[in-house]
Image (tube, rainbow, N blue to C red; front, side, top):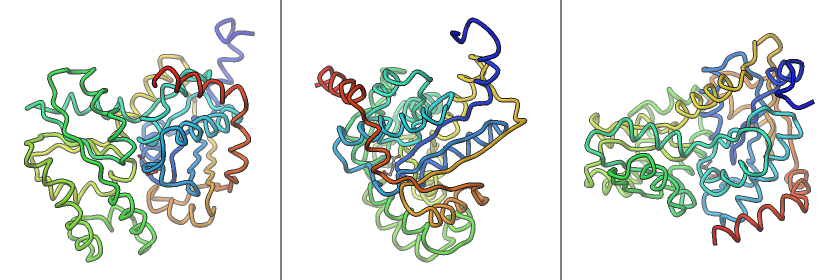
Length: 316
Ligand code: DGL
């Protein structure tokens, strides 16, 4: 029976989980915000830790990952997919929206929208991975919303490494660990990199800076310190959570929270994911499972491969 034809399917649709994925742990910053805004929703999260980072990879490879993981989530009966990774959104959101039969929400457009709302002098900075910045996805998204805004972009890949290393150091809450001047390690490594990445953006006079990578919200406090108090930092997580909420509400698909479940999966080590993930989520994830990358690879069947080839031929 088509969904519009009756209530029973709609009822079960409400209880289906939201699927969220990222190249690794960073997308938990988005998942955390979705769980805060929508505490009654069930969640399935996949962190593709074994194949992280996506940032330096060819767009074609990232698109393949998007299709594999989108299919993996679809098989878990999700009602909406969140591509909680800027690099994957830039490379494959449009393709995923075409292929999967549930709404697919990315993180680039929500971040761009928040930046356009926030800027007063209409000069917006964006930092992200090489893949995200080279794709021009943020510049396109910002200009589509307001052609009068000038975008200044810089790839800041070493910030990802810094967060990854930082996650493996210490065991206190990440927010505490990342408090400005709170730790010798972050101070020395961070400020040296920050000069390279952020000084040109400061000189461009941006009044708004988009943290266009899932890892960067974890560096929010020290980035703010370098950029100065007048620059507004935008993390896509909050806007993305709002978009997820609006989409589910508009479709009548919000859960009532009675039977909430959560499942976290990683292509890396499950115990490590649970430990490091707890530092981002602020609590222990309920369940963490391991998924072999090979289990994802086989999901890219001939139908998905054909859709990918068609998509790439169109954008070539
Ligand atoms: N999740 C990626 C992003 O938001 C950052 C890490 C990576 O390069 O995979 O772009």
